[in-house]
Image (cartoon, rainbow, N blue to C red; front, side, top):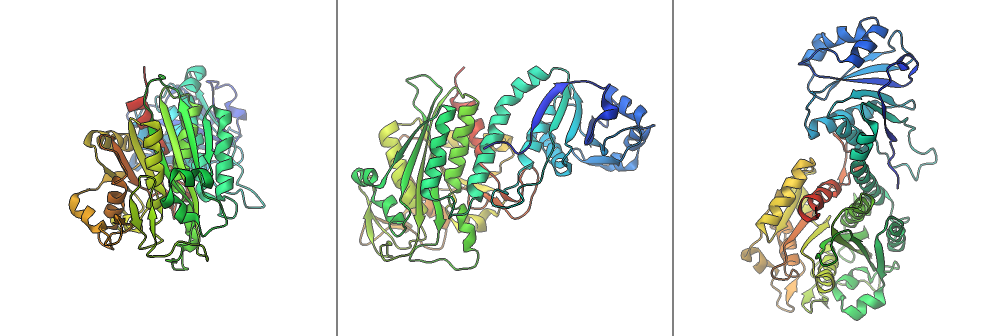
Length: 490
């Protein structure tokens, strides 16, 4: 997968401004006068830039907003965009400005006269994240967008600094592409094949098939996919960038490529959105891609359980009892609570094989999470305050909203079964919490663990900020930063 927007850093060259096509972009602090670049553009435009900067529109504009001079005299460019941006703009504001610029980009692209502006790379990050459109299944393809050229004082230094950010944009793009694909294209086999292609980035990839999972005793995961013609799989991605004796961080993703609910069939209205029920697996895949591309100095293993939940004569029935890899028996009360059955076996396998330093699972797990936090904030649950705090800080830094919810013995009691060791659902009340409580039973004592329910944030119905309409890729940036801050060496 490649970033939809071409981003380039070039040396400052004001001599060819009159011939520049597309848009010319100025970064203007309202506390200082026009920069040298702005003064040059102003002369070419016969004073239009200064008039714009001194206008009420610019004065009243919020930081990150854009004032546009269309078809400026003295230039070939379609427009001059003046972005109101402090010289020391924070990361969130710079990305917001970049996203706002991305909306305006056309076929001819844009030239940003950034010079030594500290926000240039973050602005490029915001533009790269917002310039996304899933058009792989459209005969006319995606909207054509020209390159974003950022003129800076030291392009080599800027390119070096931007390289890890470019890797993250690529990871987010891959996640969005996976979430956006229809289920007749992104089968479990196709998903596994795309993961196998990441070997080209230096990841070690293994695919476990149903016979191997059966021999491991993964009755919980296998029961989810047994009604589908699409074979269940587990894909394992290892990135070994740290010391040989460093225990890895384990990332676990729910990969239900389509979820009908099984025998506990979902309502028809909105079922087409269940192509995104593999969002957790997509995030894990995108993170692993980003870590490999930026050569992260850490050991991280990503594991995703790939299944399809379909009703058929072989499907799991409500009331069936299955045995997990751990050995616990589970009464399946509702076959639409399938994600936790996938995750629990993959989590147990990850701990048994890799002995991780910590573990994080991600899943579009519960509709109750959308009721609780809407589509703006993910819910997290954890058995370790320090680990949870580290993740929340990383998510906040990257602008990916998350909120911690409780776990507790009283919720655990709601999973009690008369026929098995536990039920897979605890009733309507506290649905997201009891789902997390279920998963917590498959975490070894002493293993720091976070469960992230991304049901509400994996997709958006409208574009906002760095997120386009549709798949968001939420979590790739936060997890990449968590790895950098908590697990990388040196």
